[in-house]
Amino acid sequence: MSTGGTSVRIRLSNVYGTKPLRLSGATIGRSAGGAIVWPETFRKLTFGRSTSTVVPAGRELVSDAVPLTTSPLERLAVTLRFAEPTGPATFHRFALDKTYRAKGDRLSDVGSETFTESTNSWYYLSGVEVAGGGRPGRNTVVTLGDSLVDGVGATPGADSRFPDHLAERLAAARRPFGVVNAGIGSNKLLNDSACGGDKALARLQRDVLSRPGVRSMIVHLGANDLGAPQVDDPCVRPNPKVTAKQLIDGHRALIRAAHAHGVKAIGMTILPMKGALFPIWSEEAERARQTVNTWIRNSGEYDAVVDVAKVMSDPADPLKPRPGYVFMDGLHSNDAGNHAIAASIDLKAL
Image (cartoon, rainbow, N blue to C red; front, side, top):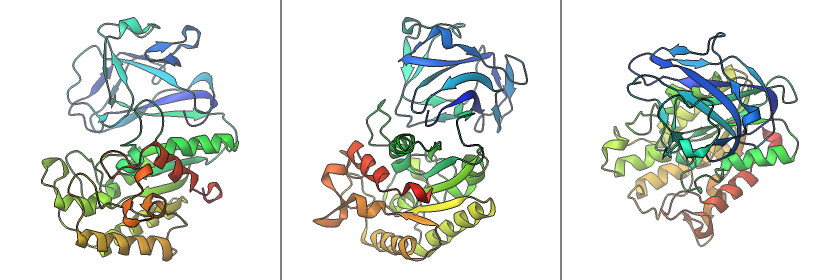
């Protein structure tokens, strides 16, 4: 949890399902680590006062709120029961944390011995929403972006993505802001892709603007648009070459949509891409990256700027990432890099 409160509800997604998703029951409680839940904290979740619900294909659904006092940065355990085959699942591929599975009705099980299977993706659960945590009104920051935001390169299970560290800074400063991570590995600004999901321009309304209490949006996008044309992989197709102007126009569309909803837009420069172990860099892509970054820094169209390129650049070769801040793939930020990115964000700008 990025923030605390006195009641919670969950958001379920069947956006990519091909048939109605039938949920037989759901519970929430405090995590005691792994698949263990503190017994006295169990709460049954309801949907329109019913313990079961159906999420139509292509839709999301929120539960009723239940009283549960939570603190910033603590972990909760959500258990979902499906009594019949679900069909294709809407899931978070790079969750960097575990989902535990077991057969039968395990909604009230508190021990980890029941859950004998696990996966590193999250299924159906697309949000936990908190109320009663402090200042009322709009106090949510959404980070929209690609694998840098999603957390590729961070230590699994350690909550070391840069939005996690931003949440830690806000909690330490006693600022009651929630931080929503809307990053998707391989995601692009201008084009959908098989593994990266809907382009950011298409998912902005669902993943950012429709979230409750959004006050500001932090954006890191464009790296995959520039890098994908050099990659021969069905996972990133379609992967047409894009120009700096097309990317800038895409960023402008994000800014206009945010401002139309009264949301502050904060732009992040595109991280250094040269030296990655997979072939995403080219001189042409680098020129476009530099042009887009110059526009983000100097145009004044974003309300504020987080200069990721500066934070992550190697002082000896600014086109490459700083060795101490980069994951073993030569591109993504590691835990130290994520700390540095979060530390560079002006909390007042949020």
